[in-house]
Length: 359
Image (cartoon, rainbow, N blue to C red; front, top):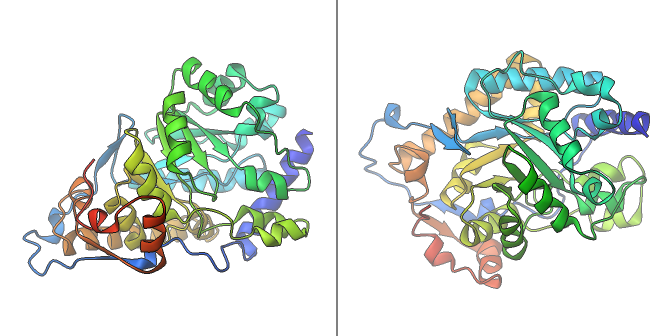
């Protein structure tokens, strides 16, 4: 099993780097959101400060480089490049699923990045289905200790599991399993989707189960059904390529329902996207595919990408008169189009949201 898992990790990495893996027709919804321009921002650009805190850790910017790599030598190289960039810019960082290293401890080194990122908020990663098939607190601790992690994410990937040829779509009892890990682990547990989005109802269940934070990982960015279709064509994969809740919609929905920190990810492609997610109430944003693709160009590539991304975010803060991410959550928005209709459909008032969110 371990060799198959290792090979699958490499296939996923190569497809994400070379294939067309993003949503086809469905968007994140951020294109339907505009900021109300503040002609008199009453601050200088240099006053816009990106610093924030997440789960007790100070960050230089409200950004996490999210997991896509590990379990193979090539994945290790990407982990080191991305983690070093996170260290340089003061961002959070998460590794890909550590299942390969649980099955084969010889692969643990492909996830270990502390030597280049001693100060980053580092998040481990295991899949929810494994916790209803034998994994428990032992494996959760092993994943954390393996990389000296500050938190463990448990990723929910039900869509990917039904499309993946060797998938394990087993979720019966998963909430109880997550609750046990939350209670038994000394570090925070982050409940994370993988491109399908999280609804208010599910977010409430996860928070009650003990999740310290929730990553909504909505639709509109990377489609893991699309990734798996390129490994083995299936009709269900093509049919469900665009499945999920748009990121902007589930961000607003989850922020409205829980008091724990919320990570907005799924199709965050620019600092402007990030600013919109933060204005909707997210505590930080997550980026994955564009960071991975930039890292393929080496240290200079990821450094240039992050500099531009953070400059864009800072520019939006200036144009809305926001001195920090908390003030950005109070910036005025205009919400229209399909995103407006979808917010109404789940019981959220876009006009209330447009007046700015407070957390």
